[in-house]
Length: 165
Image (cartoon, rainbow, N blue to C red; front, top):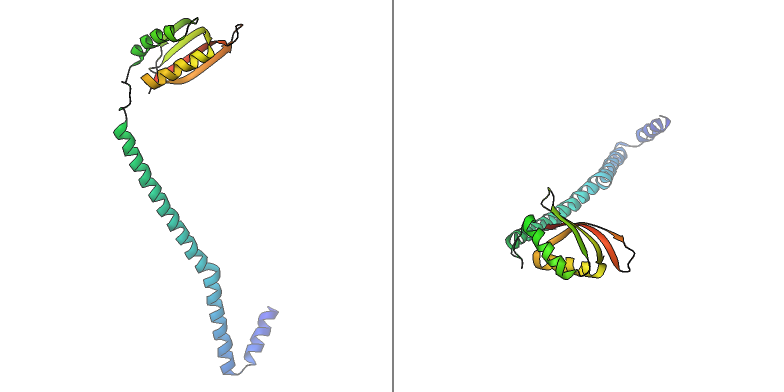
């Protein structure tokens, strides 16, 4: 309060012309401070957000274009789409020839249109090659794989869940 009273006394001590200059300068200084401290940062932030929106729009358009291309080529792979029951026989036949010495314990279809396979005493390297071949030629993918060591070196017991697509 004392500072405000001192300012009023100083302002009243000035002649009218000087008082108008000080008041006008104060108003101009207040407007410049408002512009620099509030308005300019808001404008800069808005410009930054607009640039980010444009960037996101561009990315979105590219993603839409890519999604359309994927939809166009979906299902045009080198292999025919097979169902889970056909996959059971493919797995049985191919496993017998690709996995020498392995014991195929069980191959069965589950509720998610996947095939569960239990194989004992399979050579790990042969199993990986066999699964890679199934993926490349039939579009079979591994949903889950559980393996455990056996007493024989390089051989494992596995439980697989395989699905087409």
